Image (cartoon, rainbow, N blue to C red):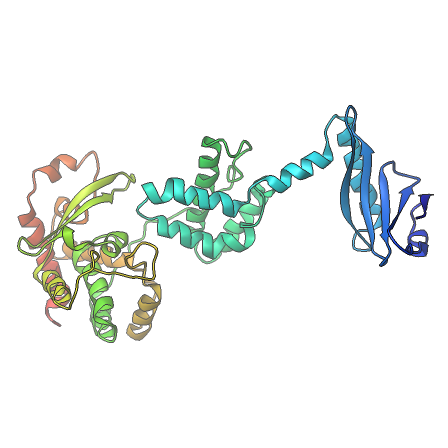
Length: 389
Protein backbone atom coordinates (compact mmCIF):
# COMPACT_ATOMS: atom_id res chain seq x y z
CA UNK A 1 0.00 0.00 0.00
CA UNK A 2 1.18 3.54 -0.83
CA UNK A 3 0.22 6.93 0.49
CA UNK A 4 1.72 10.08 1.85
CA UNK A 5 1.17 13.82 2.13
CA UNK A 6 0.45 16.01 -0.92
CA UNK A 7 -1.18 19.33 -1.71
CA UNK A 8 -4.67 18.44 -2.89
CA UNK A 9 -5.43 20.04 -6.23
CA UNK A 10 -7.65 18.87 -9.05
CA UNK A 11 -4.62 17.71 -11.00
CA UNK A 12 -2.97 15.92 -8.10
CA UNK A 13 -6.16 14.11 -7.10
CA UNK A 14 -6.86 13.00 -10.68
CA UNK A 15 -3.29 11.70 -10.95
CA UNK A 16 -3.56 9.42 -7.92
CA UNK A 17 -3.47 5.78 -9.04
CA UNK A 18 -5.59 3.12 -7.29
CA UNK A 19 -3.64 0.45 -5.43
CA UNK A 20 -3.53 -3.15 -6.67
CA UNK A 21 -5.39 -4.19 -3.50
CA UNK A 22 -6.49 -2.68 -0.23
CA UNK A 23 -6.62 1.08 0.17
CA UNK A 24 -4.16 4.00 -0.03
CA UNK A 25 -4.48 7.02 2.26
CA UNK A 26 -3.25 10.48 1.22
CA UNK A 27 -3.02 13.47 3.58
CA UNK A 28 -3.55 17.12 2.71
CA UNK A 29 -0.59 19.45 3.20
CA UNK A 30 -2.88 22.42 3.78
CA UNK A 31 -5.55 21.26 6.29
CA UNK A 32 -4.54 18.90 9.13
CA UNK A 33 -6.76 15.83 9.47
CA UNK A 34 -8.09 15.87 5.88
CA UNK A 35 -7.52 12.59 4.06
CA UNK A 36 -8.34 11.11 0.68
CA UNK A 37 -8.64 7.33 0.70
CA UNK A 38 -8.48 5.40 -2.58
CA UNK A 39 -9.66 1.80 -2.97
CA UNK A 40 -8.46 -0.74 -5.52
CA UNK A 41 -11.60 -0.14 -7.64
CA UNK A 42 -10.76 3.57 -7.94
CA UNK A 43 -13.25 5.03 -5.46
CA UNK A 44 -11.84 8.15 -3.79
CA UNK A 45 -13.40 9.14 -0.44
CA UNK A 46 -12.73 12.17 1.75
CA UNK A 47 -12.42 11.63 5.49
CA UNK A 48 -11.26 13.46 8.57
CA UNK A 49 -8.91 11.67 11.00
CA UNK A 50 -7.60 13.21 14.22
CA UNK A 51 -6.82 12.24 17.78
CA UNK A 52 -9.40 13.75 20.13
CA UNK A 53 -7.74 15.50 23.13
CA UNK A 54 -7.77 13.01 25.99
CA UNK A 55 -9.17 10.26 23.77
CA UNK A 56 -8.56 7.90 20.88
CA UNK A 57 -8.12 8.77 17.19
CA UNK A 58 -11.48 9.19 15.45
CA UNK A 59 -12.48 9.10 11.79
CA UNK A 60 -15.40 10.87 10.11
CA UNK A 61 -16.30 10.07 6.49
CA UNK A 62 -17.08 13.30 4.63
CA UNK A 63 -18.07 12.24 1.11
CA UNK A 64 -16.81 11.00 -2.23
CA UNK A 65 -14.73 12.85 -4.77
CA UNK A 66 -15.64 14.43 -7.18
CA UNK A 67 -19.20 14.82 -5.80
CA UNK A 68 -17.58 16.60 -2.86
CA UNK A 69 -15.01 19.10 -4.11
CA UNK A 70 -11.61 19.72 -2.55
CA UNK A 71 -12.76 23.09 -1.20
CA UNK A 72 -15.87 21.57 0.41
CA UNK A 73 -13.82 18.76 1.96
CA UNK A 74 -11.41 21.32 3.43
CA UNK A 75 -14.28 23.40 4.86
CA UNK A 76 -15.73 20.31 6.55
CA UNK A 77 -12.32 19.36 7.96
CA UNK A 78 -11.70 22.88 9.31
CA UNK A 79 -15.06 22.81 11.15
CA UNK A 80 -14.30 19.39 12.64
CA UNK A 81 -10.85 20.59 13.74
CA UNK A 82 -12.48 23.51 15.52
CA UNK A 83 -14.97 21.20 17.23
CA UNK A 84 -12.17 18.88 18.37
CA UNK A 85 -10.18 21.85 19.70
CA UNK A 86 -13.23 22.85 21.77
CA UNK A 87 -13.25 19.39 23.34
CA UNK A 88 -16.04 17.89 21.22
CA UNK A 89 -15.86 14.52 19.51
CA UNK A 90 -17.22 14.92 15.95
CA UNK A 91 -17.28 11.16 15.37
CA UNK A 92 -19.34 10.59 18.50
CA UNK A 93 -21.66 13.40 17.48
CA UNK A 94 -22.21 11.61 14.16
CA UNK A 95 -22.93 8.35 15.97
CA UNK A 96 -25.39 10.11 18.28
CA UNK A 97 -27.11 11.69 15.27
CA UNK A 98 -27.59 8.29 13.67
CA UNK A 99 -29.29 7.09 16.85
CA UNK A 100 -31.57 10.14 17.04
CA UNK A 101 -35.17 9.37 16.12
CA UNK A 102 -36.86 10.72 13.02
CA UNK A 103 -39.97 12.88 12.96
CA UNK A 104 -41.93 9.86 11.69
CA UNK A 105 -40.81 7.87 14.73
CA UNK A 106 -41.80 10.70 17.05
CA UNK A 107 -45.16 11.12 15.31
CA UNK A 108 -45.93 7.42 15.74
CA UNK A 109 -45.17 7.73 19.46
CA UNK A 110 -47.34 10.87 19.65
CA UNK A 111 -50.28 9.09 18.02
CA UNK A 112 -50.19 6.05 20.32
CA UNK A 113 -49.30 7.88 23.53
CA UNK A 114 -51.29 11.08 23.16
CA UNK A 115 -53.61 11.51 20.17
CA UNK A 116 -55.51 8.23 20.07
CA UNK A 117 -56.21 8.06 23.83
CA UNK A 118 -57.25 11.73 24.07
CA UNK A 119 -58.38 13.15 20.73
CA UNK A 120 -61.63 12.35 18.96
CA UNK A 121 -60.11 13.76 15.76
CA UNK A 122 -56.88 11.74 15.77
CA UNK A 123 -57.68 10.47 12.27
CA UNK A 124 -57.30 14.07 11.08
CA UNK A 125 -53.79 14.13 12.56
CA UNK A 126 -52.93 10.96 10.64
CA UNK A 127 -54.27 12.50 7.42
CA UNK A 128 -52.29 15.73 7.93
CA UNK A 129 -49.09 13.72 8.45
CA UNK A 130 -49.69 11.46 5.46
CA UNK A 131 -50.63 14.26 3.06
CA UNK A 132 -48.33 17.08 4.13
CA UNK A 133 -45.49 15.87 6.38
CA UNK A 134 -44.49 12.28 5.66
CA UNK A 135 -42.62 12.99 2.43
CA UNK A 136 -40.89 16.25 3.43
CA UNK A 137 -40.22 15.61 7.14
CA UNK A 138 -40.85 11.95 7.95
CA UNK A 139 -37.28 10.66 7.53
CA UNK A 140 -35.56 13.71 9.01
CA UNK A 141 -33.85 13.64 12.40
CA UNK A 142 -35.46 15.99 14.90
CA UNK A 143 -32.35 18.16 15.21
CA UNK A 144 -32.28 18.77 11.44
CA UNK A 145 -35.80 20.26 11.30
CA UNK A 146 -35.59 24.05 11.20
CA UNK A 147 -38.04 26.90 11.62
CA UNK A 148 -37.42 27.89 7.99
CA UNK A 149 -38.44 24.42 6.84
CA UNK A 150 -41.64 24.58 8.90
CA UNK A 151 -42.40 28.02 7.47
CA UNK A 152 -41.95 26.75 3.91
CA UNK A 153 -44.37 23.87 4.56
CA UNK A 154 -46.84 26.36 6.03
CA UNK A 155 -46.64 28.59 2.95
CA UNK A 156 -46.88 25.64 0.56
CA UNK A 157 -50.13 24.42 2.13
CA UNK A 158 -51.43 27.93 2.77
CA UNK A 159 -51.36 28.90 -0.90
CA UNK A 160 -54.58 26.93 -1.32
CA UNK A 161 -55.75 26.08 2.21
CA UNK A 162 -54.72 28.68 4.84
CA UNK A 163 -56.80 27.15 7.61
CA UNK A 164 -55.42 23.68 6.95
CA UNK A 165 -51.89 25.13 6.93
CA UNK A 166 -52.50 26.48 10.43
CA UNK A 167 -53.81 23.10 11.59
CA UNK A 168 -50.71 21.30 10.25
CA UNK A 169 -48.37 23.74 12.03
CA UNK A 170 -50.39 23.34 15.23
CA UNK A 171 -49.97 19.56 14.90
CA UNK A 172 -46.18 19.80 14.44
CA UNK A 173 -45.98 22.14 17.42
CA UNK A 174 -48.01 19.74 19.55
CA UNK A 175 -45.79 16.79 18.55
CA UNK A 176 -42.62 18.66 19.55
CA UNK A 177 -44.32 19.93 22.71
CA UNK A 178 -45.20 16.41 23.83
CA UNK A 179 -41.67 15.23 22.96
CA UNK A 180 -40.21 17.90 25.23
CA UNK A 181 -42.64 16.97 28.00
CA UNK A 182 -41.63 13.30 27.72
CA UNK A 183 -37.90 14.03 27.68
CA UNK A 184 -37.46 12.88 24.08
CA UNK A 185 -36.51 16.34 22.80
CA UNK A 186 -34.62 19.09 24.56
CA UNK A 187 -34.29 21.66 21.78
CA UNK A 188 -36.52 24.57 20.85
CA UNK A 189 -39.88 23.96 19.24
CA UNK A 190 -39.20 24.79 15.56
CA UNK A 191 -42.76 26.10 15.14
CA UNK A 192 -42.09 29.05 17.46
CA UNK A 193 -42.12 32.25 15.46
CA UNK A 194 -43.97 30.83 12.44
CA UNK A 195 -46.74 33.34 11.82
CA UNK A 196 -50.16 31.73 11.32
CA UNK A 197 -52.62 32.82 8.67
CA UNK A 198 -55.50 34.96 9.84
CA UNK A 199 -58.64 32.86 9.79
CA UNK A 200 -62.18 33.98 9.15
CA UNK A 201 -65.14 32.14 10.61
CA UNK A 202 -66.68 29.94 7.95
CA UNK A 203 -70.38 30.61 7.31
CA UNK A 204 -70.95 28.24 4.37
CA UNK A 205 -74.17 26.24 4.38
CA UNK A 206 -76.28 24.64 1.66
CA UNK A 207 -78.87 26.91 0.14
CA UNK A 208 -82.40 25.87 -0.82
CA UNK A 209 -81.38 25.11 -4.42
CA UNK A 210 -78.19 23.33 -3.33
CA UNK A 211 -80.08 21.08 -0.92
CA UNK A 212 -82.38 19.91 -3.70
CA UNK A 213 -79.42 19.07 -5.95
CA UNK A 214 -77.61 17.46 -3.01
CA UNK A 215 -80.55 15.18 -2.20
CA UNK A 216 -80.87 14.15 -5.83
CA UNK A 217 -77.16 13.44 -6.11
CA UNK A 218 -76.91 11.19 -3.05
CA UNK A 219 -79.58 8.87 -4.51
CA UNK A 220 -76.80 7.45 -6.72
CA UNK A 221 -74.74 6.38 -3.71
CA UNK A 222 -75.07 3.20 -1.62
CA UNK A 223 -77.62 3.09 1.19
CA UNK A 224 -74.91 3.34 3.84
CA UNK A 225 -73.32 6.36 2.17
CA UNK A 226 -76.69 8.06 1.75
CA UNK A 227 -77.47 7.38 5.40
CA UNK A 228 -74.16 8.84 6.59
CA UNK A 229 -74.63 12.16 4.83
CA UNK A 230 -78.33 12.45 5.60
CA UNK A 231 -77.72 11.78 9.30
CA UNK A 232 -74.90 14.32 9.27
CA UNK A 233 -77.39 16.83 7.90
CA UNK A 234 -80.42 15.90 10.01
CA UNK A 235 -78.63 15.62 13.37
CA UNK A 236 -76.24 18.54 12.95
CA UNK A 237 -73.64 16.36 14.67
CA UNK A 238 -69.90 16.62 14.18
CA UNK A 239 -68.46 14.45 11.44
CA UNK A 240 -66.32 12.36 13.80
CA UNK A 241 -69.36 11.61 15.98
CA UNK A 242 -71.44 10.40 13.04
CA UNK A 243 -68.55 8.27 11.80
CA UNK A 244 -68.24 6.62 15.23
CA UNK A 245 -72.00 6.29 15.87
CA UNK A 246 -72.79 3.05 17.77
CA UNK A 247 -76.04 1.18 17.99
CA UNK A 248 -75.89 1.14 21.78
CA UNK A 249 -76.04 4.94 21.68
CA UNK A 250 -79.31 4.92 19.70
CA UNK A 251 -82.73 4.80 21.38
CA UNK A 252 -85.28 4.56 18.56
CA UNK A 253 -88.18 4.34 20.98
CA UNK A 254 -87.29 7.65 22.60
CA UNK A 255 -85.86 8.91 19.29
CA UNK A 256 -82.59 10.13 20.77
CA UNK A 257 -78.88 9.57 20.15
CA UNK A 258 -76.76 9.73 23.28
CA UNK A 259 -73.14 10.60 22.42
CA UNK A 260 -70.97 9.72 25.42
CA UNK A 261 -68.31 12.32 24.67
CA UNK A 262 -68.18 15.12 22.16
CA UNK A 263 -66.10 18.27 22.18
CA UNK A 264 -67.03 21.90 22.60
CA UNK A 265 -65.10 24.86 21.21
CA UNK A 266 -62.55 24.50 24.01
CA UNK A 267 -61.87 20.88 23.14
CA UNK A 268 -63.26 19.45 26.40
CA UNK A 269 -65.17 16.17 25.96
CA UNK A 270 -68.79 16.31 27.10
CA UNK A 271 -71.77 13.97 26.75
CA UNK A 272 -74.50 15.10 24.38
CA UNK A 273 -78.06 13.95 23.70
CA UNK A 274 -79.19 14.57 20.13
CA UNK A 275 -82.88 14.43 19.22
CA UNK A 276 -83.63 12.21 16.22
CA UNK A 277 -86.18 13.82 13.93
CA UNK A 278 -88.58 11.30 12.35
CA UNK A 279 -86.61 11.19 9.07
CA UNK A 280 -83.40 10.42 10.94
CA UNK A 281 -85.12 7.71 13.02
CA UNK A 282 -86.52 6.14 9.82
CA UNK A 283 -83.05 6.03 8.25
CA UNK A 284 -81.64 4.26 11.31
CA UNK A 285 -84.58 1.85 11.43
CA UNK A 286 -83.97 0.88 7.80
CA UNK A 287 -80.25 0.35 8.46
CA UNK A 288 -81.04 -1.76 11.51
CA UNK A 289 -83.29 -4.05 9.48
CA UNK A 290 -80.71 -4.86 6.82
CA UNK A 291 -79.04 -7.87 8.42
CA UNK A 292 -76.55 -8.71 11.18
CA UNK A 293 -75.51 -5.65 13.14
CA UNK A 294 -72.01 -4.46 13.84
CA UNK A 295 -71.46 -2.47 16.99
CA UNK A 296 -71.02 0.48 14.62
CA UNK A 297 -73.81 2.07 12.60
CA UNK A 298 -71.24 2.66 9.82
CA UNK A 299 -68.78 -0.24 10.08
CA UNK A 300 -65.62 -0.37 7.99
CA UNK A 301 -63.57 -3.59 8.37
CA UNK A 302 -60.68 -2.04 6.43
CA UNK A 303 -60.16 0.86 8.83
CA UNK A 304 -58.07 0.63 12.00
CA UNK A 305 -60.96 2.02 14.04
CA UNK A 306 -63.52 -0.53 12.83
CA UNK A 307 -65.86 2.24 11.74
CA UNK A 308 -66.12 4.59 8.78
CA UNK A 309 -63.39 7.16 8.33
CA UNK A 310 -64.23 10.32 6.44
CA UNK A 311 -65.73 9.30 3.06
CA UNK A 312 -63.96 12.03 1.08
CA UNK A 313 -64.24 10.34 -2.33
CA UNK A 314 -67.99 9.82 -1.98
CA UNK A 315 -68.37 13.45 -0.88
CA UNK A 316 -66.47 14.65 -3.94
CA UNK A 317 -68.66 12.52 -6.24
CA UNK A 318 -71.83 13.91 -4.68
CA UNK A 319 -70.69 17.52 -5.00
CA UNK A 320 -69.57 17.01 -8.61
CA UNK A 321 -72.96 15.58 -9.66
CA UNK A 322 -74.82 18.28 -7.72
CA UNK A 323 -72.59 21.03 -9.12
CA UNK A 324 -71.94 22.35 -5.63
CA UNK A 325 -68.65 24.16 -5.00
CA UNK A 326 -66.66 25.03 -1.88
CA UNK A 327 -68.61 22.75 0.45
CA UNK A 328 -67.22 20.53 3.19
CA UNK A 329 -68.80 17.70 5.14
CA UNK A 330 -68.74 19.93 8.24
CA UNK A 331 -70.95 22.39 6.35
CA UNK A 332 -73.83 19.91 6.72
CA UNK A 333 -73.70 20.57 10.47
CA UNK A 334 -73.70 24.30 9.81
CA UNK A 335 -76.62 23.84 7.40
CA UNK A 336 -78.84 22.41 10.15
CA UNK A 337 -78.05 25.32 12.47
CA UNK A 338 -78.54 27.88 9.72
CA UNK A 339 -81.92 26.47 8.69
CA UNK A 340 -82.99 26.40 12.32
CA UNK A 341 -82.22 30.12 12.44
CA UNK A 342 -84.00 30.70 9.13
CA UNK A 343 -87.13 28.97 10.44
CA UNK A 344 -87.18 31.05 13.63
CA UNK A 345 -85.31 29.03 16.29
CA UNK A 346 -83.67 30.98 19.10
CA UNK A 347 -79.90 30.96 19.55
CA UNK A 348 -80.05 28.99 22.82
CA UNK A 349 -82.13 26.28 21.11
CA UNK A 350 -79.70 26.13 18.19
CA UNK A 351 -76.78 25.93 20.60
CA UNK A 352 -78.46 23.12 22.52
CA UNK A 353 -79.18 21.10 19.39
CA UNK A 354 -75.63 21.45 18.07
CA UNK A 355 -73.94 20.76 21.40
CA UNK A 356 -72.32 24.18 21.79
CA UNK A 357 -71.10 25.09 25.27
CA UNK A 358 -70.07 28.44 26.72
CA UNK A 359 -69.86 29.93 30.19
CA UNK A 360 -72.48 32.52 29.34
CA UNK A 361 -75.10 30.19 27.92
CA UNK A 362 -74.66 26.92 29.80
CA UNK A 363 -77.20 28.00 32.45
CA UNK A 364 -79.75 28.74 29.73
CA UNK A 365 -79.17 25.35 28.09
CA UNK A 366 -79.69 23.62 31.43
CA UNK A 367 -83.25 25.02 31.64
CA UNK A 368 -84.14 23.63 28.21
CA UNK A 369 -85.57 20.19 27.65
CA UNK A 370 -85.47 18.33 24.34
CA UNK A 371 -89.01 19.21 23.25
CA UNK A 372 -88.36 22.70 21.85
CA UNK A 373 -85.05 21.47 20.47
CA UNK A 374 -86.77 18.58 18.68
CA UNK A 375 -89.50 20.84 17.30
CA UNK A 376 -86.92 23.28 16.01
CA UNK A 377 -84.92 20.54 14.29
CA UNK A 378 -88.07 18.93 12.82
CA UNK A 379 -89.16 22.31 11.46
CA UNK A 380 -85.75 22.87 9.88
CA UNK A 381 -85.69 19.32 8.49
CA UNK A 382 -89.13 19.76 6.94
CA UNK A 383 -88.04 23.04 5.38
CA UNK A 384 -84.91 21.44 3.95
CA UNK A 385 -86.09 17.99 2.95
CA UNK A 386 -89.81 17.55 3.60
CA UNK A 387 -90.92 18.97 0.28
CA UNK A 388 -88.74 16.52 -1.68
CA UNK A 389 -89.09 13.36 0.43
